[in-house]
Image (cartoon, rainbow, N blue to C red; front, side, top):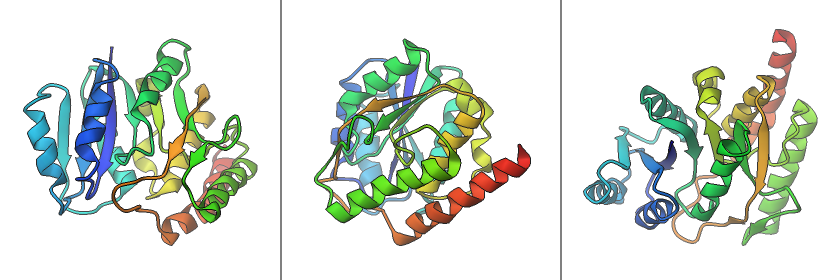
Length: 240
């Protein structure tokens, strides 16, 4: 059994070495694929240096420019499915907002408990976010409530980007057809998995606000999710 952790990066030189080391310290079955969008701060160089240490476990895809989170994951999924080795594929941020110590818990939900998708959830068993401004926390929480109401999807943390997929999920949900770029992509991935009948488990995590680097969140990403959810739900109704 091998598991691939996909980590998109853009100017994460302050975090990338530490996050790679932390992931590899969890379990020998974890491999990492970094998808770098032509960082200008030396992120790629750090990854290449570490590849000398982790030759068969650390992989790098270099893209020519800043192309967005969704296409980074789509490229990573393509890369993973081209290999026969990876039974479980993760999405994870580079900035330690997702704790590498939670990776085995997500993996266990799929590998041992039989779920098809494990979601690192900030909103199961209460609100589990540290160091966020109150305005951002409320916006995130009520965004997930809004998505549940519109879609009917029984997931508390609909925008979570910390996930473990069983390989068969990615082989069957046509993720390359999703055109959203930001959090709406994360919602759509869960929605398609749920509509296909795959079993989803939310695993409670503690989400930490990044301490190093700059957040990539923007108003455009939020608006895309706001209106994209309605479009996604209407599309599913008419297509059945």
